[in-house]
Each structure stands twice: as structure tokens, then as C-alpha cells.
Length: 277
Image 1 (cartoon, rainbow, N blue to C red):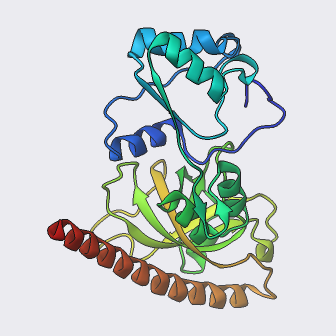
Image 2 (image 1 turned 180 degrees about the vertical axis):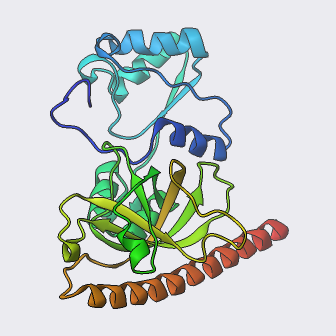
């Protein structure tokens, strides 16, 4: 979209590196990232699939019902089926997935996240929606009220959930197997302290562990959004804000404890089904 319609950017749900990690978790062993520029955008549908046949040995192309490739999206499904017959590959068209009346499509997922309904987005994605960012220096206000936060600099092309307070899991680094730390995250402009710039701030519970440094500056954090607790609001005083933050922390702990229990129950159920088979 940045190449074809630079004035109409689409915010990303994941980075190319994250998509490769997700593909690997599904058992896909090889992934290829192709730079999309104006030259590549001019390839016809036939030229595009010919490259796949010549360089990747294309045997089956799996696509969604509205898929099209090549210049001017000329490679629609009937065209791809015809090209497959000529060039020796099959085309499989996946059926749409409907979840309680909503067809699972990228624009629906984006809209749901932008509205702050990260629990619903999790149903769509099959996983928590994640945001990756680098910890940068803030104004230090959280530390002065006894609730230190990590301020994340998130790439501007990444979609952020709607403003509000969320129960989140935080991972230090991008390793998907890294421990998940319970946390509460605020996204917004902080109206009570007259903020104007949208920020992502995370308070990690029980951090740092005894004997360890709590310096996170420059580190990459991954936030997994579990549930929205409330929208952002302006409080009459800093004391009122602090009191609400403590309520948010209690609510987040409760949500995450339940999420952990649900995850364990799901693992046990899957293990039981495996034994039954």
C-alpha cells in the first residue's frame, strides 16, 4: 500500500519478521520475503506465477476467496486456475471463516483492535494481538507516584489498540518462548497531566525480581493485549488518578490470573484429546 497508495497507508497487524515466526509455529519451514517496489508491482499475473514456478517449484497456490495478484489485480482466481493448468500447479481457495456473525477479514480485525476490543480480536486471530516497541525515556512521572512504567516507542505503521487501559502480558525481547510478565498498559495522551502526545506506557508487576536491575531502556518489549479494562479519562486530581491506577492494577491481575488458568485448562484438554486419539 505504501507503494501503490502512499497517501492511504494501512496500519500493520504484524511485521514481516513476526509473520515468519507465526508461519514457523504452524510448521512452515521456508519463508521468502520479497521487496515490493514499483518495478515488482508492474509484473503481470503470468510473470508473477512464472517466478514462483521457476524459483520455488510452485505446486499448489492456496488463496482466499477475494485474492488477486499481478498488475491491476488481473490475477484473480479464474485466471490463476487457468495459469495453473498451463504451468502445472493447483489452486486451492479457502472458504471464508465466520465467527458469531462476523466474517474474519483483515479490515474487520483492524477495526476491532482500533475500537479497543482486543478480546474479540484475539478470537479472530487465535492469539493475543501484540505490539512491539523499544523502551525510551519518558518524563519519569510514573516513578514519582510509585508506579514506574516502561514507555514504548512503537513504529508508526503499527496499529495500536484504541486509547484506554489494558491487562497485558509483557515479554522482554522478541523470543516467543520468553517468560510472560503480568502487566497493565495505558495507551493515550494522559489528559489528567495535560499530555498531548499519544503514548504507550506499561507497568510490569513485581518487577524487577530481587537482585536484578530494572533498567529496560533500549530494550525491545512485546505486549500481548488480553482485555481492555476501561477507556482513557481525565481525573480531577493526581490523587484520583493514582487511586484509579491501583484499581486498574487489581483488575489486570484478576484478568491475567483467569487468562493463565484458561490457558492451562486448554492445554490439559488438548493433551486429553491427544491421548484419546
